[in-house]
Image (cartoon, rainbow over all chains, first blue to last red; front, side, top):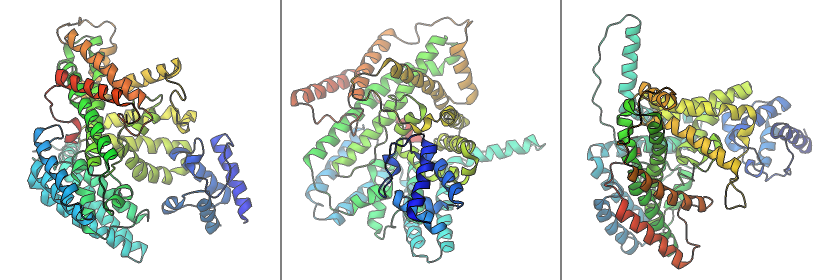
Length: 79
Length: 483
């Protein structure tokens, strides 16, 4: 899947979970930069991403998710 | 040797002198001095467990290296599990053995057994809840490839045993502390003075605020069956402040003392009472424990329950907080304390407010009326829940709380239990304490006043000094030293 399409789908998930679009998608974007993206909403976001891409994360993957760029590459490695 | 004792002053002054003027050639000599002082400090508190501490250091060091050197994930996992069993095993044996043993025998008796039991007399090694959590976090971080394991036994030993934090935290993380031990520390006037300020504020919180609250609180809790509702409410409110001043005071002293050695420990309290909801409060209360629990309990748990959506979150958060409570000690009161805090999160999870972290009175000097009401309501809720923290058993705690709200209470107000002079005096000092905390709520610590002009700074030092001279109480122990 193309990176842009992956990002577009992630963007949809974020908007639907967080209820706003006050963020810009770029590789260095981290959860701290986005209002409302905390440890709790993080799990909901991950679940929605899993459903969207039909993949399963591992606990160890979680620690590799440092920013948007790493999220995209972890997703890419699984589809 | 607690921080606010004369023997600690005699201990630390020569060490500071040696650290900055004799052992200041390189990081190795600095670390050697810190290690010797730390082991001496621990042995001075309780020499019988020095051997245990050293064993824990060596074993965790060895396991950390083995986790990383193992090629296969299966072998890595095996070393991790060995570490988990050792560290959690230590904690369970020393701290919780009798609790589980009693529970087990009682359970047998429910099913028709008639065993009696003698609990073992087990001495609890000082600081065990703190240093085992630190080494546990270290091993999990190594396993998760969050950090590189230490390959320097000297640095690792200082990381575990460093005396300012060994007895009562903060529970340090290797990622923040190890890099500081890997470089030579240079004496900085600003950091040193900032450390002294933080010690002064911690000392003031402990020996003036916490101890004066204790004078009000202790007689009420010791005789709660015979007191009127309003007295019990006063007792609960002052206990909440006492607990905060005691532990945040301790933490500020620990962090301040560490700054004198040029080492920054993590912040443990960030003015928690200035919060408008429970999740904000826990972001600011005993931060080193809460973040530990979030990273190593809540995250894996909510991750494995993620398909249950919000229900999974609720189960994870309630379980995490029960564990937070239980961490304090083998008593049902702590479990109930944690359980209630976990339950308070449920409305936030379902309303989606969990995710919004509030910045209080942003850009303004004072809170709005709405913020003020939320803060007061939250404080009341916390104070009532703290009754479990203070009580000897859950029945006593429930009775205490029910008696506060009993309308046709036959017990009349007993004016002798609290002297009104003590109440007015303590309230007055509390107003000063919380004004300073409010002003500094967005600073790196509660008494970071380096931006104030010289006259204001010295007036504050003088005022605190006068308050300490006139109102300090001979200190009992710190509440958190027993955990």
